[in-house]
Image (cartoon, rainbow, N blue to C red):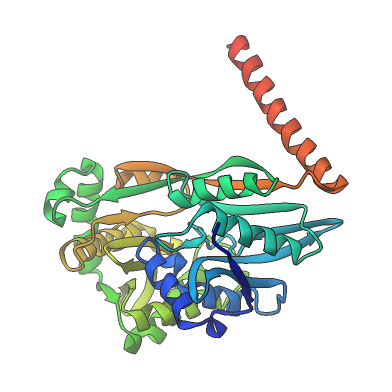
Length: 359
């Protein structure tokens, strides 16, 4: 067995270049695994949280696994969980191609020991079909923890195999009609559609997005600096696609998309309901879809979190995101958490059986 060196860093800026290279490899899979994503999350959401860190397992100077985590205390329970929140649509340990179960196991053991022996670990949302998901389950079992899998949400996406015109012809007739009719009405009323992609337009785009969001049906952002920070970072990387619909110069709809490495992620959207007659959200989605298909030539469009019915108007495939909750049976608190987890699952199973018999 090869020896593993575990190091904890408080931010990515303190990490050695070879560790940062792992993040660059991970961002090929998802924007949300890039170092810049975690930087913005840390600065705008967890800026006063000292109980977070980036654990790195390495052999000599060759990093094999990075795990971004935070520690949460809930009463007597000490929980180690993924560095993320409701903004996060995909989480994963960052793995080198040659990472092993032993590398991740040593890292998890070290991270839990650093905090007086954590009682619980939670990692979500993850891709249950990924190597990282299987590796995490196996690593937890190997250090004596009891991992349980749980469903997080559905994820609708579109494998892009054609251009925009061909794709649109396959869409629901009502969608095509709405784009045509409302597009003419919107243009006649002085409506325009814009896509911001660069740092030069980022600040105006942020102002437009905030204006629309404040007038939308959505609750105020609990972390108002997160979206502006994300937009600026995406613009610097060339990954920003901020769509803005304006009526006679006034923003009435906005959508934040992230495009990188052949994927377009639809991250955040809002519209002013008093202008719903123009279907500006639909028009903006169509405009952005055309751009990412014909200009960016992406291979996939992802609606990220949730099974909202409107997503099926644009997407064709569904997959799921799952999480892992693991308990430590070595302490009384850990045993109690294990019993609660097993009990809740048995109860759901019994209810399901009773429901089927009743049906």
